[in-house]
Image (cartoon, rainbow, N blue to C red; front, side, top):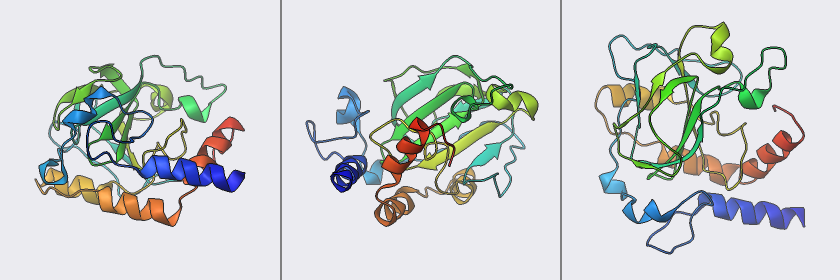
Length: 218
């Protein structure tokens, strides 16, 4: 039974629509008929402004923390906003991993890749909204556990999962090489790396969701 659940969840998480009415990830909506094809994917560096810095590493898992307090956060690619957390519920005394991001946005890109933005300030989009590459979606803020650090944007890239989970959404591959290229105007897509990762660990969505239900962070 468990094997069947893993196979079904994996199949759903890796499907990409080819036409209106095709099977799509659970969070897709009617806007999917506007999904851009591979040769139309255009990437934008996600933070506007000068001297945006991001380290080459990140604590415990792949992600990037970009400086630029109160600067604009832009969609790196066209897609649909599938989740917006507009209330900062992080409590330092509890330090729940699921609320550390504070104000967050999750974007399912037209490239079948999930983009996660956290520690945001002002939010400029709503759940279910279609956005274009380069569109303003928020500002860099200090929500969540960023209250105890410098103001920054947490940026994560991962596969699209068919259920809610935190451990993959917060970051599954290193964004830095893609950020480097987008900053230089090079249109490099993380799609192939994400798909390779998905094929190599097909049950990761199920495992991450189970860990979250148990209250774990691993």
